[in-house]
Every structure is written in structure tokens, then in C-alpha cells.
Length: 385
Length: 243
Image 1 (cartoon, each protein chain N blue to C red):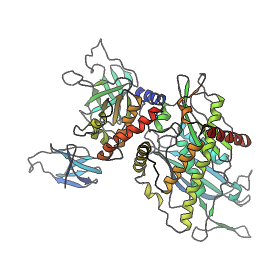
Image 2: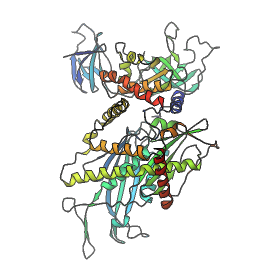
Image 3: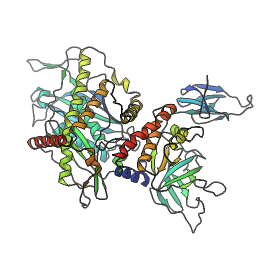
Image 4: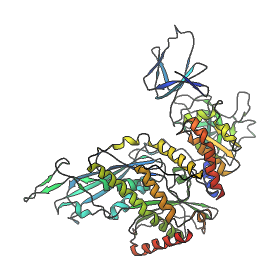
């Protein structure tokens, strides 16, 4: 099925709403939609939702021969699947630009950032190693798939436990079932975070939004997808679209991303740890049964929250685990947000360049530099407060 | 037990395969109409979709269900997006599985010399003249007396958004006070297509977005709750406007 075309009316109204300082879903420009994580009954199965966007990631493992060049390292591979279930215009089994883009982001963020200790996946050097495979399937496409895929696969990898193995003296390898022996958790050193910034260039002004929705993604001039971790390392920068920005703007995006990375990473860690803790205390995992009606429920909660925060009374989010995470996210945003809303409504001026595609292909290590940047970001935000 | 909401009587929740009633045209002389979600076979009317079975006063039974995919029906009013010009016709998207067409002569006061010019991406509000299975639907913007009666291309400057089909049916119901309730707050023009597209125009951009959010509220709330919350939604947007 063909994608429903976007009318001129939709295009112009999104832009003029932005000029009036509004987003369609009553979000601030740098506000992220609600993120939830739900774990399946087995280890390494996780669905992540960002607003209406929904992605499922499943980790599987098998014993394989290692690469001859790296005999003592395990393997890790990530695969993204887009089916007509996500949106009717995706064709099954045929790749498109979006799949390639997502694959690129995930490969750089998860595989090439070396967030997982691959040497711990070695069973016997030169003979057998574990091969972890992450299958990411998009269930519903409502914008910002990059962040959703990243968060789902990171949570699934952290949640995953592989079966225990014993190596006999004569070199025989026995893989124990999960019932026989306690499975071993994967060891993840750093939590990669992915954040998307959308840019709208209107009459020489650049409006910057976080977490674009599907309609915003179709209208925007370009976006910047920053992959990073809270330790101050940028793992990927993808900059597709027809927009050219000043250096300062990109740097300010990255600063903003760093200020949010920590809370985002902590949210994932907390959700995974809570679920594993539950399993250890022998509470039977519920699986995805609670996801059944959640879209409508979250939409409702969101509307109620928006309504209530305006009616001057202090609004407290009920102490549910998932809600909790969102609350902490919101708090952090307010504290560390170097762009106060005033700055957003008076957007930065950009020079008009000829449209061209810019892509930073190599992951850069800017550990020391970016930590300084982070400090600066905090300082400015405090100053503003 | 039956409830009356907005002109239709709610009979109950049905699942696909549920028997609704026995109907034999030889015995039952009183005719009934069966709408979407129902099927008559072997003198029995059964449901084919899960949803709420409703009955209007004209003995019309139908199942109101959450659906986003539009299936074109003759005489329904829809909003279409112009895709391209093809000879004497415009190809338009009405959200169905197939693209629809509209002749440039089927506008009010259109003749071969004064033809209606449209650009790709423009919006048209019209009525379906032909909507058969496996056939390209055809839309017109005039009634049988060649009058526009509100149809035609939509002016610039509004906003358009999609709702699910039952919400679209709900808000156009003349006995539904929801749209009137919004109008107490702000003056606006609204056009609703049965294909789930809604076009709204008000003076201020923030009002248009607020109206959109009010209508989208109906997707997850009952009519009563949504009615209660309309003003609060506007408040949350007016706060935005002040900043």
C-alpha cells in the first residue's frame, strides 16, 4: 500500500504551529514523550514505547566459531525488521532507507561502541564463542524509531542471561539448561543512549525539536541523531536530511544530549534491574499482558496530566514503577535543560546554505572534551535558573 | 437493556459470529437495513466485526467499531488530498485502498472554459458518487441540482488531522453537543469527512491545535468525560500562548 500523501495544509500548519511556539501534542520543544519498558516472560525480550511508537527487541544466543582475527571475542549482531504492521506503507522483506538508517544507528551505537564486553562471551579461544543476536522489530511507527530501537535493544541486552557452560579437560563443552544452572547475565559496561533532534528551517530561523512525532518527521528539514553514553563519549552522529547548520548549533545539541543521557541511561538500568530483581525473588513474570490496552491508557494519562498541571494545583504522578521513571525524566529535563524555553521561542539564526547532505561517518572519541562541555552545560543551566 | 446515546440505540457488545436476529424476508414483512459490520446469511443476521451494536430509529442496525482504514461508501462525505492531474480528472487520495478521481467539471459553476485549477496537496471536500468493490471511487463536489452545498476545495490556513472512523461519525452526529460545546469557547469552522479526516479553521493557531486535541480526546475517553475536559484543554493551551 502506498503511503498516504501529506497535504499542503498539514505541512504548513505544523510549521505555523511551531512559529506560534506550539507542538501538536502540547509538548515543549525539547520535551520527550513518555517512555515505557516492558519485559517478556523470557530473558532478553523487551518492548519499548515512546508515545505511540512501539518496538520489540529479542536477544538470542548460539555457540559459534570465533573470527580467526579475533579468536577470544564473542560476536554481536543487530538486525532491524520493519513490516507492514509498523505502518501500512512498509513492504515486507524489502529494505528501504529507514531500515538502513536504523541499522546504521544500532550498529554504531551497540556494536561499534563496544558497550558489551565481547571477551566475556568467549567459551574456548579459537574454538567456540557465544554469538548474541538482537532482533529488533518495529510494531508501530509513530515517529522517532531510532531512539525506540536503541532503547529496546539496550534494555533487552542488559536483561539477557545466557546459559552457563562447563568446559571439560578434554575440551568438551556442555551447555546447561536454564533449570540446571543459574544463567549468567551479560556484562554491559556502558549504556548507549540515542537522542533525536529535528530541525525545521523557516524563514532563516531554525526550530529545534526533540523526539519528533511521525508527522513532524515528514515535515522537518532534517534531523540529528546523537548516539552517546553518560561517560561522555559520542558513539555516533547521523545527520540526514537537507539542512545545514552552524557548528555551534550541533555542539549545543550534543551538550543538551549529554545533559539528558544520564537520566535516560539510569531509567533503562533501573527498569532492567527491577525486573531482574523480581525474577530473583521468584515473582512470576507477567510478560506483555499489561501492554494490551496501554496505548489508550497512556494517552489518557497524558491528557489528564497536561490538563491538571495547568490548573495550578500541584500534580503528583501516582507511584507506579513506569510512571516513576517518567517522573524522574521530567525532573531532570527541567533541572539540566540548558535551553530554557525562552531561548527556544526565539530561535537561533542560521545562514542559508545550499542544501546538501552531511554525514559524520566515523564514531568519534571525545571523552575529555565532552565532559568539559557537560560541565559547561550544567553551569549555563544553573545560571539561567 | 438499551441505552440511547446521540440518536442511536445501543443494544450491546457483539463479537464476530454472534447471532443478532433471525430475519426471513418471506415471513418478516417489515424490512430492516443492515449497516457495516453485519452480514445476512441463511436468514440469520450475524456480526462480522467486534464492537457495539447500535440501532437507529429507522431500523438500521450497524456495529460501531474502532477502525482506521476507510472503505469507500456511496453518498458519504469525504476529504480528499489532490495527488495529480490526469487529463480531465484529478487523482485524489481519500484514505481508501484505491485512489479516487474527480472530474474538473464536477464543481459548482465549472465549465470547460472556467475550469477549477488545483495543485497537488490541496484538500477537497466532496461526496462519493461511485464506490463499488474493485472499482475506482469517483467523487463530486456538486449535488444533483449542480449546487455546491458546502462542498468544494477547502480554503488555506486550516489544520487537518486524522481520527478513527467511529470518532468521525460521533462528532458529526447532530444530537452530539461536543462541537457546540467547543464553540462556546472559540469560534471555528470544521469539516469532517467520513474517511476520518477532520479539517478545522479558527483565528488563532493555538485555538486550532486546542480544538484538534479536544477531538482527539474522544479516541480515549467517553463523550461525557471529554465534554467535561474541553475547557481544561483550552486552558492548557492558552497558558502556552502567553509565554
